[in-house]
Image (cartoon, rainbow, N blue to C red; front, side):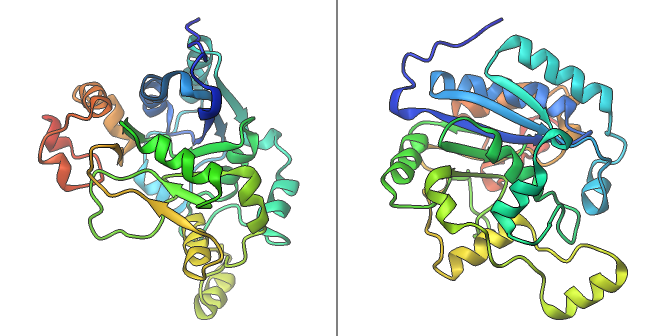
Length: 289
């Protein structure tokens, strides 16, 4: 077992809350180890909430053929043995009703109208033991050279309610992303339950008639709260010298020969120019296709 000492954690303690589907085994095997290396002793724990239900909608289409229940549980057991800060929990074992009530009042948004998870994301946040939490998808990769200190300072002082790590490039996507954001659980609780949960009226009626979910994605709920000046938000400039995030994009990349090299280079903040043109991991930049 390779536990990292926490002698420097002090005022910088934070946890990572992430989620796993049946398609995430190969990806988590590499990204969790990367998070441990990047954040070192500042990282108190990594909580991964596993949803064993088969994927649906657009998300299922993206990860076709990758769903493997045995693989995901085998990978998580291995990570827990490697470092005791890594802990997995089954979504079905959590107090979902009370979590839903806290975050969404009387609404019950398990997934959004295109199939993206909602409850699993916030359930993972509720499972960590620290106040400050980085909620991120299982395919997020980071370099860190100062943005963590910036985010922690803003959250602890109350200057911001939500902080998003800088991206390697912003492109045209400017609203907050649920792929990676930080909050203080204590301070953010004053904004709960969230209020702006549904698609517009016409689509809500149409999707109800189809028997489909009528909720927007979690990031849209947060973006609406930000737009309405109910929640304050900050991200540092993209592509700067304090580090950034890169979105892994496809779970299938994790089994490619070039992926492990890309992960280590991203951790060091050394990436090809071609990768600097997009937030999504670009195989061509790393010798893939």
